[in-house]
Image (cartoon, rainbow, N blue to C red; front, side):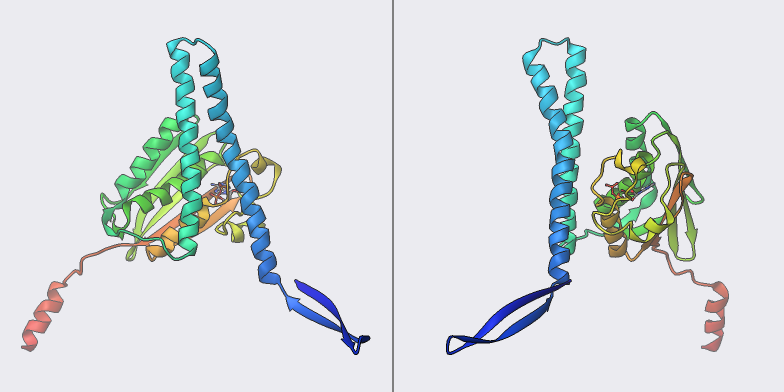
Length: 272
Ligand code: ADP
C-alpha cells in the first residue's frame, strides 16, 4: 500500500513546484486492519455470552421460579461466564505469545491422562458425538507444561466437536514414530476447503462460508495451538476433505532413555 502526499513548494511567496512523497504503509495498513478485525471479533464474541448472562439473570430476578428451573438457568449463566473467561484468556494468551512473554513450566508429563481428561470434559458437554481413544503404549512422556498441553488438546478436540454439528465420531490415535509421539485427532465433520488449509494457524482466521458462519469463534484457538506446539519443539499438520472430515496431527518430541546395547558394551570392554 503506497500513500502519496503532495506539497506545494514556494519561494518568495511564489509557487515554483510540487513535491510528491511516496510512502510504503503496508505494515500500518495491516496493523489497522488487524485492529478492526480484533475489535469486531471481540465485540461479537463477547456480546453473545453476555446477552445470555443478562437475559437469564433478568428472568431470575423478575420471576418466581421452581428450584429445578432456577438450577437450569444458573447452569447456563455459569457456562456462559466460563465461556467469557476462556475467550478473554485466549485474547491475553495471544498478546503474551506475540510479545514473547509467555512462560512455560515444563516437567515430565505423560500425555495420555491429559487427553483422557479433555475427552471426559467434552463427553459431558455433548451427547451427539462418540469418542474413541486408541494408543499403542501405556505412557508417552514428554517434557511439557501441563496446563498448556491441556489447552492444546482442548482446542483441537473441542474444534473436532464444534465443527461436526451433526455428531459423528471423534477418534484420537496416539502412537510413537522414532523419537516422537504422534496424536491424530480425527473427526467426521464439515471439513475444510483445500484453499483454506494454509491459513488455519493464522490468528483471527476463520473459514468464511455459510456452514462456518453459523458456528461462533474467534479464530484464535489454532494460533494458540501452533505456539504451544512450537514451544514444545513439536509440530502440527492438518488433512481435510470438504464435507467429509478433518484430521489434525500433533507431533511432540518424546523423552526417551538411552538404551545401552549389550553387544556394544561388550565390544567396548574387549578393547580395554
Ligand atoms: P475458531 O474455532 O474460534 O474459529 P480456531 O483457530 O480454533 O478458531 O480455528 C480456525 C478455523 O479453522 C475455524 O474457524 C474453522 O473454520 C477451521 N477449523 C478448525 N478446526 C476445524 C475442524 N475440526 N473441522 C473443520 N474446520 C475446522
